[in-house]
Length: 493
Ligand code: HEC
Ligand code: HEC
Ligand code: HEC
Image (cartoon, rainbow, N blue to C red):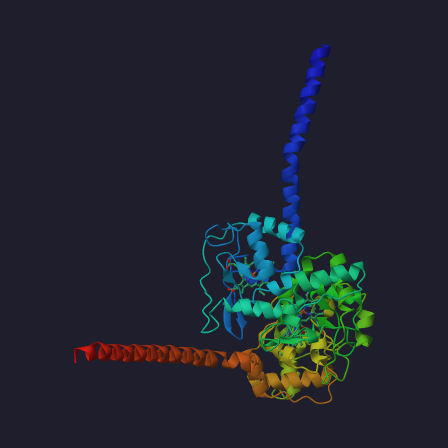
């Protein structure tokens, strides 16, 4: 009996050990993939590499740049169309040097200048995750098609030499701020949108996080400046904004920021969101001369700080219900006037007094940074485009008015709400301003504007030099031949 017991126990022990040994690597693999998923969220690869129908990582989204549209490719685990046959080194080179396999130099529309600060461990986890996601077995329909000379990818070698070394990390941060800096600079690439570009389209670190135009939108000044930036926000408010895309009576995340919250920031841990907030408070202030009043109005937002966002079903008002919200269609005295336009098109959700219903996610216009800003771009853009993305809580969104109201009506409403709720004593947005903002046109540096002309002139000069060279060479040869002939002829004479 005894030997049998021992052998059973031995078998059980050996079997158990073998089992743990076999289970252990797959366990850590799963953990690595899980960590990679978090990193993919924090780095927001999906924001650009999403398919036109919303398929994650399918590629096809065009990134508008002054050089033209640059299309993000399929980065799913498909071996043929995605990055399924990438090695870890391949991905590391893409993220650190902007170099894809086959000596393909990437444009910085892929934010490798920011990602290059990512740690080896994080890249390894991200790699494991990307290899684990379903393959999307087709190429994106859109393709990058830049004009000469921007289509010469090796030009990026020069760009990289001039730009990649420019970033110098801040010193003297405590542990929490340093974690925040890592997320802000190297994972969430906040500067891709919030730091303006110089003439060469590199980040202008002298105005680090100082605000930059982004098509129709303006990525706000998020330095620690109390008047122009986020200096007045509490760290909790910033963290709340990253999670919900909303801080009652203060700000909503709309446009590209709404996307960043929707795809990325809402998934981060509270600890990481607070770390980002703590770091932003250390960023050297940059003030904007035009911003006279503080963007942040603490009187309204301080009492509301404790307000928990409440999830309610989207409310749609029909004319009979309007009166419940203090409005009857016949009450509107002068429907064509700015007040009348506001009453008809906005007050149902934002209320007559502009306080909205923030607890149900109808933004307060009163105290809202977008209205208090000296830069009217985001206000006009949100009226044109509406709000299409939400944060961690589902909520009602806002319709866009592009094509429904004309540019003059949009300008009238924008001027009205800025004066009424935004603290401006005057506002003179014109219908042309609205048309310009709607166009999303981006000011382009002379260097980039004239680059094609200069490049063609360069080509012409090279061609002329070659032609001249050939001509001289042939002339020489001709003369040489003639001289030779006369030499040969002479003795005969
Ligand atoms: C701001 C938009 C944006 C974000 C965010 C972004 N990418 Fe890209 N990515 C692009 C664009 C645009 C290209 C194409 C660049 C080009 O054609 O030179 C690209 C190219 C790539 C390529 C090269 C594929 C190839 O073989 O040609 C890889 C790999 C890649 N991205 C991976 C990632 C990963 C991983 C992340 C997240 C860590 C990420 N991208 C985040 C825009 C983005
Ligand atoms: C894809 C571009 C993009 C990225 C990436 C991005 N932002 Fe923004 N951000 C914007 C735009 C555009 C706005 C202005 C629109 C709005 O108010 O919602 C904005 C607004 C904000 C505001 C509100 C400022 C105010 O005065 O209301 C904060 C705070 C902010 N961003 C912080 C960040 C941080 C921190 C990151 C990185 C974790 C980040 N953003 C990444 C585009 C971006
Ligand atoms: C059907 C309801 C509805 C109507 C009508 C509406 N809005 Fe909104 N609006 C919203 C909601 C909801 C939000 C907040 C969206 C979010 O962040 O999730 C919002 C957000 C805003 C913001 C905040 C943007 C920011 O950057 O913080 C502004 C400004 C705004 N609306 C102005 C207007 C104006 C002006 C009109 C009239 C032309 C209007 N809205 C009509 C529902 C509406």
